Figure (cartoon, rainbow, N blue to C red):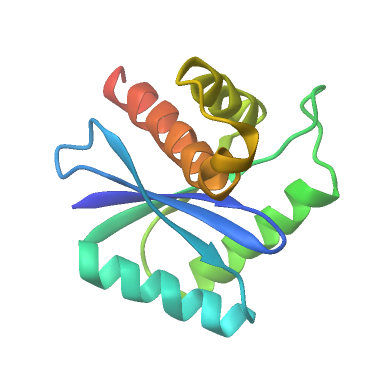
Amino acid sequence: MRILGLDVGDKKIGVSLSDPTLLIAQGLKLYRRASLEEDLEEFKRIIKEYEVGEIVIGLPRDLSGKIGTRAQSVMDLADKIRESIDIPVNLWDERFSTNEAHRIFDMADVRHKKRKPYLDIMASQIILQGYLDARSTR
């Protein structure tokens, strides 16, 4: 079993996967959103191909921890996934995942233009790794 990590945006979704031991998150792909039905079909395809047993979606709370319009949109998508796919779907605080991704790219001296296609993938990997780390300490 693996865990699927998602960093959801309006137009793109960063996708990552855990390794089978549930210790390491690995970036998988950048998915360009289509209709809700097509998005759900893509998730189902990934779940089947990689034997995914759980999904973690980054929840973009604002700095005070409140739920804004983006977070509500992510929560609505999580509900739609739960309705159509019979595996656990968890939300994980993603407040600083994009900042962390930028910091990692800065340390690797990757220019801003070159990092853009990978930013959402890296953010999904950071979200999933945080979830895996917290899970392993329970």
